[in-house]
Amino acid sequence: MKKQFKLGVIGGGSMSAAVLRGVVLSDFLKEKKIIVSDKSEEVLDKLNYLGVRTTTDNKFVAENSEYLLFAVNPKDFEECVKSLKGYLPEKVISVMPGVKKNVIKNTLGVGVIRVARCVPNLPCCIGSGAIGIDMTDFNKFNDDTDFISNVFNKLGIIVSIDESKMDAVTALGGGGPAYAFIFIESLIDAGVKQGLTRGEAKILAVQTVLGSAEMVQREDVPINELVMQVCNNGGAAIEAVKVLEANGFSSVVEQAVGASVARAKELYSK
Image 1 (cartoon, rainbow, N blue to C red):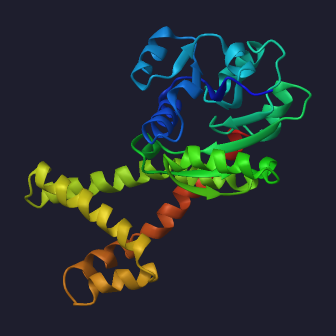
Image 2: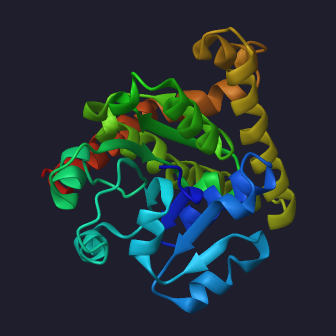
């Protein structure tokens, strides 16, 4: 039976708000085809500008939506499922960090449930994110994979990936913005120590990182060759690179990502 809404979202926090902005403002979905539930009327009020239907009734959202997106805190998932009062959705999308597909299915109950698990990151909020998605449950259903892909394409770049690699996605894509923010802040602080104003240093640091990332994306050149292009005039840059190498910069980054993966496995081992 055809559902009243194409997309139902349970949870109205920052990530679901990013999804909703992406699909509505891009005209991928009309606002009348979307419904969102949250236990907080205040949270729902913040979504009014998008024109989507809102409610505090999770069961109504689940029953009347073709695709049901769970965007709640993992610790609240079991309570959320109880609020569905036994209703079993068929097509589920999850952006809940660390909650594996089998846990979602087992918590929802016995039934033919297909789950797409997504790991978005913070820049999705401005449409420049990186999203790891496991859609293997939908592999035989092209209309479903197309829909799910189009939803997250509005938030950034999608990498289709097996769920077994999601801890690595969490550490690299999910945690990566924090590493980048720390690096940018360190560049700014270093620039200030060398006589720049904080405003000048911020402009230079941010644009340098943006431009460098774009070159990596655009140029079909190994990254180590790009490094040498910066340093090949025998000038100041090579001295900075020598200091980074001597202090194990690459090794520290590798250790940081490894520690994040280990913690993700510890937290989400179910």
